[in-house]
Image 1 (cartoon, helix red, strand yellow):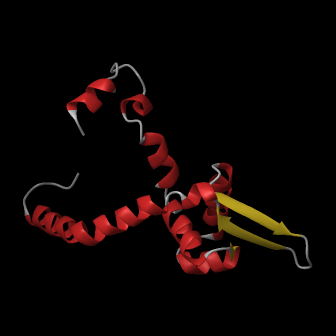
Image 2 (spheres, helix red, strand yellow):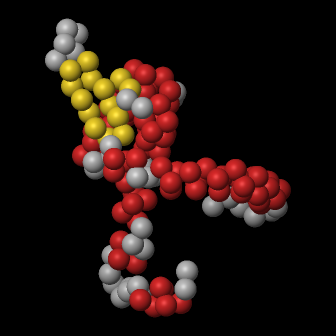
Image 3 (spheres, helix red, strand yellow):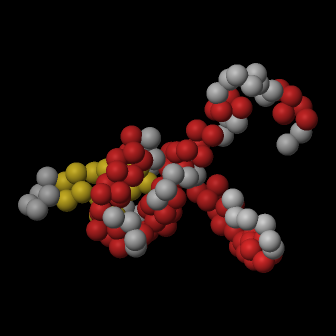
Length: 134
């Protein structure tokens, strides 16, 4: 981040956090609990029914999955398709907008592969010290 970038975005301390950090809204949308595994699964495996998605994610409750899918649909990241059959069938798929996040997820996966061992080492070092946990 250059000084110019930071200077261009210097804000009054009285302004809200969104203005202080312009990526905050994106972080709130994309990295809310369960959002990442839902989007990852839909991007990796394509259109899925609720039960398929739930099984792929694992420990998510049906209530939470329903809430997250509704929010993702509202945000335009997921498309819900209702099929008026007997019994009714509903499928979820990642939208084009959601698919545009794939490079971000790829970079994060790359970062995780490269740096999570360092994070684990730092945590073990911290835990072995006399410092209290936050």
